[in-house]
Length: 404
Image (cartoon, rainbow, N blue to C red; front, side, top):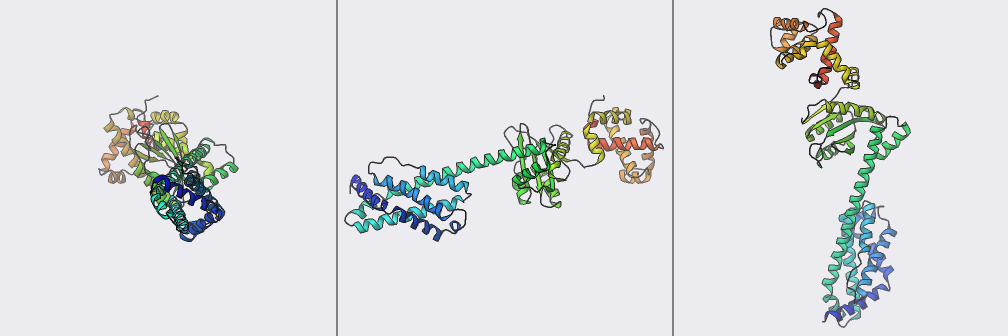
């Protein structure tokens, strides 16, 4: 049969179906409900599905009913794709519903052709490839619209979550009511187990912690991030305190540069304070290092990080010439001093820890004493030494700072 004649006969069949389009759309919707369990949920209501079916069928019929139609209007499937994406309907189920709908529509055309008789069935079969190409075009338009809408939503969600994280870390004076609202939107508890992570970017355009979010999801740890030039800052919400250690290990496994982690904190309105710990922890790592550091929440740590310059001056005043010694001598004396303090002044116990003789410990401590501001039998000198060693133990870069 000539293509033009076949197209005219298909147009007549389509116009016949147009007369009962409401019943046809209703039957298609019911057919979808009968065969796809998802559509029996409350996500896509019956009226919504029926209206969508009618909208799409009307466009198909209009195209087939006009033999001169050269182009297909794909606005109907595009709108359906957008709407279902906003409803979080699974794309696979939406496409399955489309295939069912087209199959049902084809069967109705075939029934109408057989009812009409004559050459109508042959005309419909001749036009079958065009109709199924139309089905493919509709499916592609729906898929493209769905994915574009989902991508836009993801960007909008990321931007909004990033703005909320910025509020938490940049707004130390936020009211409790505001923080409660931020917690609600982020789906975080106001009171729980939190960590702040700040990661230095190494390669422009590449995330500094690749694959971390999937690792955190596996631990049931929620996170929200703020991306900035050269770094990313995230707030991690752990379901139990025990999960914080596992989250820290996940951060370690993903690190590509310097990463600082705050101590665990329990209220979301403490995020700004916790960020300072994370930033100082990252900055205390050597430039170019691939490492993760978490600071302990101790009074000394807070004092030091609030004024590194003052601490630097104090360390140099206390340790004096020790810091000017060759690195090997300096490292040996400081390690011996730490062991001696941990052994409560016992040269024998310190020697066991250092795998050396007690007399060696005594010799080193006497040598160290020459650089201190007084003898080690003075409790004030011991206290100063302990503070200085704790400071450089927490912030090793203090040893590399130029003496003020």
